[in-house]
Amino acid sequence: MRVFTRSLTLAGTIAATLAVGGLTAAHAAGTTLSQGHVDVLDVEYDGTALALHVHDESVTPGVEYAPADVVLKALPAAAYTVPTGTCYSHLGTAGTTVHRLPQTQNTGLLWPGISGEHLATGVFQGDKVQVELTSLSGPGKLTVYKNGLCPRNNRAYDSGDATLANTRDIAAAEHDHANWVFTKAGSYTATFSVRGTLTNGTAVGPASATYTFQVG
Image (cartoon, rainbow, N blue to C red; front, side, top):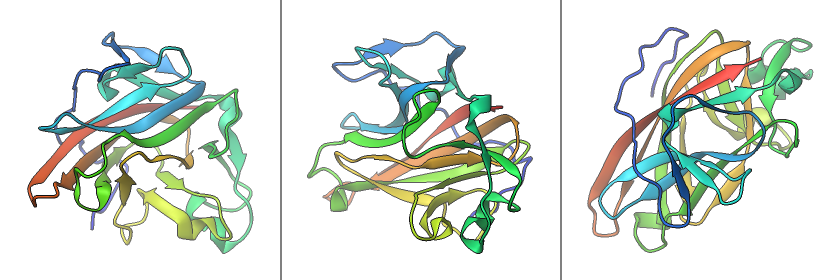
């Protein structure tokens, strides 16, 4: 169990692996992505090590970045009013404004995906790996959740809740979307790590990557 605060020191090394076949590698620092379909947690395995990339699918051909080379931006249009009810209490006080990159695509905003599409089946036990939010620094908190009858019960990550494992299984060939909510405007850095166990029992990872989000 990991406890988050707003001023955690980020730890771990950045996974900076080259792009796999069929993608264009991009290495120029300072690229900002603010619209379109972007797989933020894009897991890959090269036969030796796991890595996390950012895969921009808003362009053709798709472009792959090391997380350290991009800024992921939530534009002002991501402003979202917290609904009433305990099922939304993880977002803050009802009626207040947070910043949500939604699960359902809004063409004017970044649409952050979660992808295991570059993982082959039959490699990892259960055909899945584990991606953990290990630290967050910023003016507020980050929560990633799916829509449902009670969204609070569908959280994969919540930096403000130490009772959560803040770990999500990502399956081989999976592609998914969720709501990414930042509770305050400003700059955030988030570190995620990925690990898995091969079918022969060999542990792989963890490998870490640090992401920068600019909100508002």
